Length: 292
Image 1 (cartoon, rainbow, N blue to C red):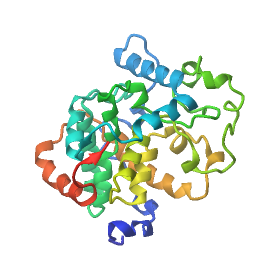
Image 2 (cartoon, rainbow, N blue to C red):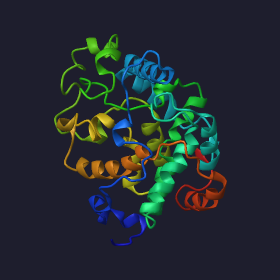
Image 3 (cartoon, one colour):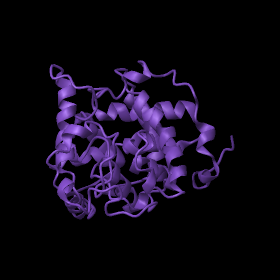
C-alpha cells in the first residue's frame, strides 16, 4: 500500500484497506446492534425510548432550527482534549452494546484503527473524535437530538430505520404530503451533501471542523458526517438519492464502521498513557481552542 501524506489520501482506494476478518470483536457480530424489544430489560427500553423521542420530534423545521442554534458556533471555545474529557460523563442512551462513558469508546475505536492502519494518522484522529459532537448533550440538548442513527428528513423514512413501524407515529412531517413521498423535497440522485439529515452529533461535528478549518482531509470529514447514517451505509436505503461520488464516501464509512461498532467492549484502554500520541495528532490537524 502506498504511504501518502494526509492531503494525498484520495489516491488510496479504501477497498484496499478493508479486511475480511473481524477477530477483535468481543462477541459474535450478530449480537451487535440488537434492537429487539424486551420491556423487562432496562437498557433496551432506554434505547427504545431514545429512538421514540427522536423519531417523534425530528422534522424538517426542527432540524432547521438546530442549524440556526448550533451553527453560530457561539457556545464555547475549547480544545479537542477538553471536549473529549467531557465525554467521561456521557453514556450514550441510544447504544444497545455498551453502557460506559463515551470517551472509552473513542479510544477503543482509535486504537484499533491505529493497530491495523499505523500509517494513516488522520484516520486515528478521526476515530478518536468521531463522536465528539455529543458535547451538545451538556448544553441543554436532549440525547435524542444528539445520539443515535441518522436519516434524512423531508422524505419517506427508510424501511431499515430501527423501530420504524412504531416510533414515527405522531411525527408531524408524516402528515405533510411534500415530505412523506419517496423523494419528498429532494430530487433523484441529488447527492448526500444535499440531504437535510436528522440533527445529531455527526452533522454538528462535521460543521465544527469545517468552521474551524481543521486540517483533516475530506474523507475524514465525510466519515464523521455520515458514520451514523446506518439506514444508508448498512441498511441499503436511500440509494435513489445518491450521486455517483457518494459511492467513494460509502467505502470510507464502511471501512470506519467496523472499528466504530465492533470495538465496543468492557475492556478499558489506558487513556492517560495514550494521550501524548493523540495530542500530537490534535496539534497537527486541529490545534488550539476551537469555536463550538
